[in-house]
Image 1 (spheres, one colour):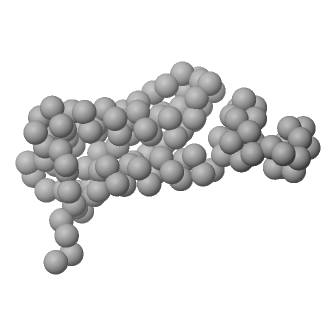
Image 2 (tube, one colour):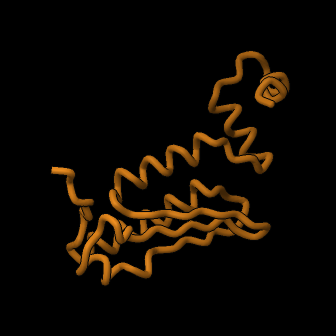
Length: 120
């Protein structure tokens, strides 16, 4: 598939050019979501996430994982944080938005950073 896009874009097309072309075609390159997951795990260690896409929106949720986050943070944020962004968008954008909402709320409440317990 990438060869097709490079052919259309020209041999000197950069990865960014290919990514932009894929995005315009409604295709989310896998690495966008991979990087969003990495950012999420760095920002909210010990939290779970879900992402999804339908014909209308891309959506994501994040919340404290019961295996790592204990009360009172678990009780306070057990409902998680959610983003539902109308298309055209990506699951990576939705995950980034859910993380932004979580970090902003945690920061405002004095609960950020929310760290998972160490293995010490």
